[in-house]
Length: 216
Image (cartoon, rainbow, N blue to C red):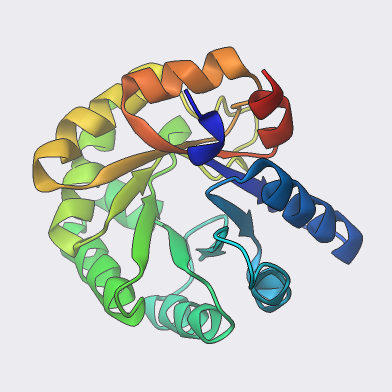
């Protein structure tokens, strides 16, 4: 199995330097990863750096809390695409999910998908904070909103586990008939874990351990 084709090599820490960004871009080129996931301020640099490659530039919106207004998330999305983002990973508004304000979530996803101008939109549902029913509901709302992927985690929940195979399987089972795909992210640090996520249904792996996983 060519694991590199699943990996979005990720650097989202708040103090990431330009040199560190350049390092993951070089690694993505070397290992032919499907993409890199970087903070919005690094999108333009990454796109220019990767211009002669097939590596996708992915960025995050409303990250990591998901609590920005819809209007701000839309502005972030438009700006990211202007700077060269190929795909958008947005954080769901978890408070609205717990409130049962499902129309808000569907509308927000729909508006951001429109702002993506045909590019893939992944909805980060933050599985560490949800039970099984809530995970399923978040996936169903992502379907209604027109998303392309559902994604497990930001990796920023304190004491969080991140992606779990059973959650990925539930997400996959919920969205597969609607044509959505699953990205597992958070805590994927070795080949064994990566393979479990793929077996559970993930077609993308967000990880900062891409090189280690690719090397086996």
